[in-house]
Structures are given as structure tokens and as C-alpha cells.
Amino acid sequence: ADGDPADEGQALLQAMQAANDVIFTEAAADPAKVGMCTTCTCAAIRGNSIVIGHLGDCSAYMAVDGTLVKLTNDHSLAEEYIQQGLEIPPDQAHITNVLTRWMGIEGAIQADISDAMQFNDENTLVICSDGLTKVVQDAEILRTVSMHLPGSACRKLVETAKSNGGPDNISVQVARLTRF
Image (cartoon, rainbow, N blue to C red; front, side):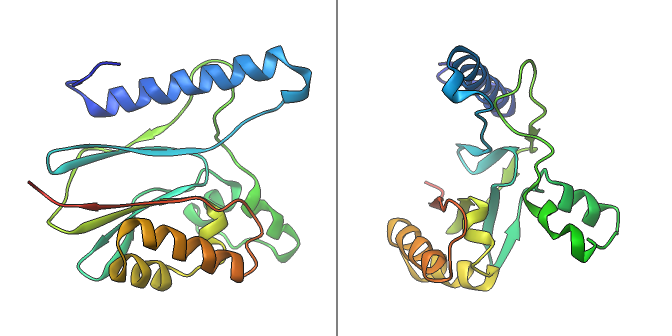
């Protein structure tokens, strides 16, 4: 709605908050939707800079110079264990699916908004749900986005995740970033 915001990060946060408020309102108004929530990872691109907004366990990656760089950290109990240098006990393996932050809450969200990052010609942005990353290795994601145009890469990654068992929803967006 701002058209050309001065601060892309603030604009992303406002958009994420607005989406959160709609989700919360819908869930509160309809008993069939009680507890409705979601995760969100999004990007604002202007010129040769990109800002990432993130909440939950979807991920953003950048394919740069033959490597896949993860730009986000999951908001999950498993990630908290990892950040603290702890091992996840075998009897607690289910915590990989336990979120610590998400959209659909009452009040202000606690989204991560990155600083503006510069990209080079032909970098590739990948935003995906954990339904992809649980069953497709980073090397396969990198190979696929490097060898295919974005639309084809999305289809191939979803097909690969499904053929690997796809235990969760699978969504993928790929954008090839080129300076003009």
C-alpha cells in the first residue's frame, strides 16, 4: 500500500503484522478456524538489495557462487537446542515440528527482519516450506535452482520432495536476481 517505502524492512513487518491480524480475526470469528496459524517468509527486493521477513520454520536461501546460503533461522524448539549447542534427545525428536513463533497470534508478532543485503548478478533466491527441506538436501536444491529457470526449478523441487516421501506441505518460490 505504501508504493515505494523508504524502509523495506519496516514495510515487510507492517505487511506481516496486517496478515497476522487478519488470520487472528478470522480464527476468532469462526469456531471451525480456532487455532488457525501459519508461518511466513517473504522478501522485498529493490534495485540490487533484498530484505527478508521471517516467522516460523519456512526458510530463505540464496544461491551464491556455487553454494546455498541459508538466510533465516527456524523459530522452533529444535533450532533453540542447536543455538544452545545441545543435542536433541532421541525421545524428543518430535520437537523439530514444535514452533516457538508463528502468525495468527493476538497482538504484535515477533518477526525477524534482516538488514538489507546486496546481491550479485544471477544470484538465486529460494523461499520454501520445511516440507521441502525435510526431504531434499541443500545440494539437490542448489543443483536444481542452478540448472533450471525458476518456474521449472519450483516444479522439479516439489516433485523431488513428493518422491522422497513429502511428509508435510511443500511450497517453493524461486527468483533469479539480476541487476538491470
